[in-house]
Amino acid sequence: MAVAGGRIVDVSARAPDGAEEVDARGLWVLPGAVDAHVHSRDPGFPEKEDFGSLTAAAAAGGVTTVVDMPNTLPAVDSAPVFEEKVEIASSKALVDFALWGVARSASTAADVHGLLDAGVVGLKVFLGYTLRRSNRQVIYTTDLSDPDLEPAPGYGTLARLAPELAGRGAPLAVHCEDPDVLRAFARPLHSYADVLRSRPTLAEVIAIDALAAISRETGLEAHVVHLSSAAGLDAARRARASGARLCVETCPQYLLLTEADAERLGGVLKMYPPVRAAADRDALLEGLREGVIDRVATDHAPHTDEEKLGASLEETAPGSPGVETLYLSCLELARRMGDPGLAVRWVCEAPARALRLSARKGALRPGADADLVLVDPNAETRVSAEAMHSRQRHGALEGQRFGFAIRAAWSRGEPVARDGEPVGQPGRGRLVIPSPLTGGG
Ligand code: DOR
Ligand code: ZN
Image 1 (cartoon, rainbow, N blue to C red):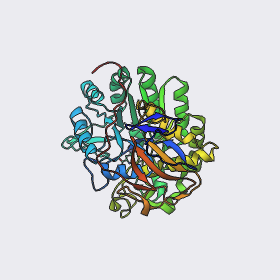
Image 2 (tube, rainbow, N blue to C red; image 1 turned 135 degrees about the vertical axis):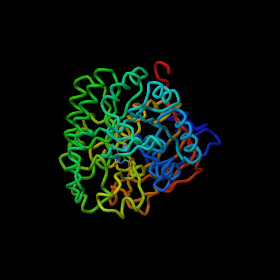
Image 3 (tube, rainbow, N blue to C red; image 1 turned 60 degrees about the vertical axis):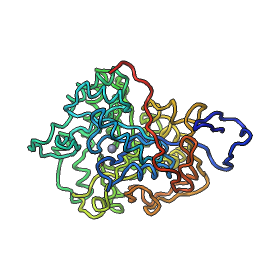
């Protein structure tokens, strides 16, 4: 594979004279992964993570593009906030990044088109999460008496904004847990069983059914993120069969873990939606094998040690870091299915295509960015907090063994990781803009 000027120029060539050569004998050369779902916490919560620590972890794990969710502070609800965030990310990022925008209940058509024109990959809706008007922080609360809180976006917000997005060919990603069901089942969290009782799979089903109806009605390309249940998978299957344009994402934690891991992991396993029963895990694996699930992303959601390890289950912040273990976990899962190459589909090709980044990302093709990963298929990696590079090192996949190791990674031809350690200059990472949309803002 020949690389020049940061791009792949040939995939069957001998090195031209004078070229620097990397001997990859015994190793696999794969495209860098595109993690379609991470939470950088930057700007706003540097004690949890920032673009420097996020992308160092990404590079070490062979993720050469991170796509960041908009619940940073202020939430990415307009073009000026987007521009500010791009500037911050560009000053710290080791690998390339793309950004999701947020849809609020108060978002106007002009806000949506402004964000799409600025370069977001699409918009995200946190169903039932409200927003503090004074600082534009996305928060979850059931107490809506505070006048500073904007009404949470619901199906009406989706239905109102869907035609704007559909007209541009841009996706809407939705956190699919129906807020009304969550409110009805809310309870104090004394045990992991309470966590499961408070987030029933019905919440996922109802949200997916509603999203499917909106997609059928408007032509919206809807992304169901972090699918967690067998019942939700069935809803996605029905939605697809009914003509809804649905793209489905799940995460390694839902494919590898079950409620039985709660005893071992404690608050580290707390995340929304939750890791559920073995039957849910098995159904999701089958959905991935069948192709009902398109991609695997991490929902990398770091919090501080105090918020994750030092609190009661009730008080523990939901979310787990995961970007550094995306590639290895998916290679392992794909190998167990009999074809490790499937991992490249789940974490490179599918996300790049769905987010319209495939002109440059997600495949080893002449003309694409030289985002490369060297994988050793004869090594073993055991996930351990000490070896992680996120600011929150304790993740839900702690202790998992994967029969692969990431030996090195390059971003646009430049080294960004070597034997599990990030290398290279923070601030070299750039914004990746999706291919042109239809229509105009
Ligand atoms: O567990 C979660 N953490 N679920 C979400 O939807 C949000 C995320 C976060 O941002 O911490
Ligand atoms: Zn998320």
